Image 1 (cartoon, rainbow, N blue to C red):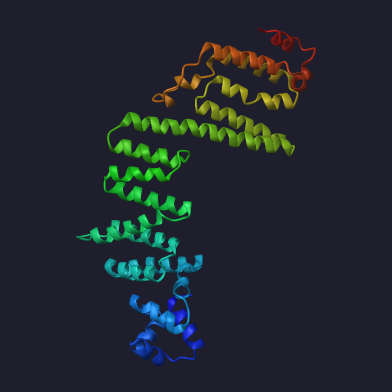
Image 2 (image 1 turned 90 degrees about the vertical axis):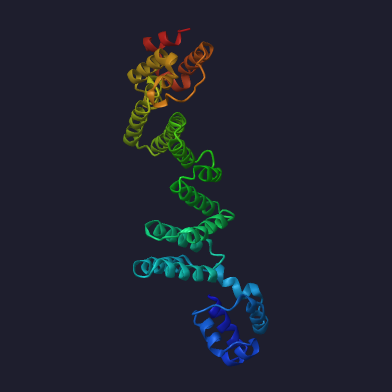
Length: 345
């Protein structure tokens, strides 16, 4: 409910005419009429007297400002978009400020309106954009204090983009702090700053670290889908997902060990002796290359710890111990290849 509707509602409840209200507030009846028809807003100095006269609190008088529905927000933004097509920017800007003054606590409206104003301002050939930009930035800065993380991220993203366009990379970089270190957008934005400030090695490293971390995330997602497929008895899908895991490990150049190991679990589940033995043998043969991604050009600017020989031997022993597990691989009893493999030291 708008402030005009609030005034009209409580004025009528008091059985008070617009003229009577105007006299008691020291304004004209047309002024009250304009408030109620949302053609203007009361002066800020009149808010408390209006609330007292109507027997309501200031919170009640102003609470409407947090009650916009998504449909109402969309309607206002659509109206702003339409105005931008036919009305000078300065007039659209004033209209927007008036709307936001009516709804100063509606963060989504504020942010959406600021984005539209900024986008149009970029396209406008205006001699002086400073005052407009200052206002738009002030909205973004206010949203940074929002209790909603999503709103804070959108505001930080807008401020980052604003200063990047201005080539003020020193001003853009602090807004990366609003993005968690796990958020891929943070690395992408940091890489952009490195590119623009002529630090190509650092930019490569950011992109490479992102690529490397994405492999882990995608791998977990594919394995989760594979597990669901097996649980549901959809083995055709399970096979396709295992194949995708293999392709992905190859595409990300993670090394033959990662490519081969992808299919072992499914082969054992289906008791495919030939596939299981082949996977086991190749994994053992390739175990010394478990850090094969270290040699890939995709990660050429990243620093990895050396794979110690002791670690490789420990991993080999753990693999053999796993391969000897009869609960999983007992169906291979009597298979000479498996027995020979299990005797390895």
